[in-house]
Image (cartoon, rainbow, N blue to C red):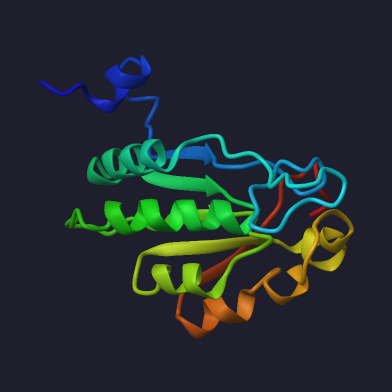
Length: 174
């Protein structure tokens, strides 16, 4: 018999604690060169950041959570991390739920058009950090024409994907 989510994570059932969302740090940040990107970082030749999950792990976890009605919250700054989360959601959404979940792609800094297209028609929110959009320094860290794929808010809106803004305050300004 498969364990319940609370058994799986070792949290006892309680009327005071409800697990309805799990955050995955798929990658890191651009500033410390851990955002998982297709272009290489300028200071570390042939380095593309760090992914914290294999594609198989992320897909398996996301599918299990989705099928149990638990929202996935993906920290994805780099375009390669966005692709990983989009592929995981494609598989997870094969499980049809009576009440749709709105999964979250948070802190998107870089995203390719083809990965945004994968999310079209899914219940997801693209969450951008407004402060980063206004003070962007991505080009200082990553080689290539990243300005063509950074903060692609218009691409999400064109595909009727929910767009919202958030902050990691107090880490960044609100």
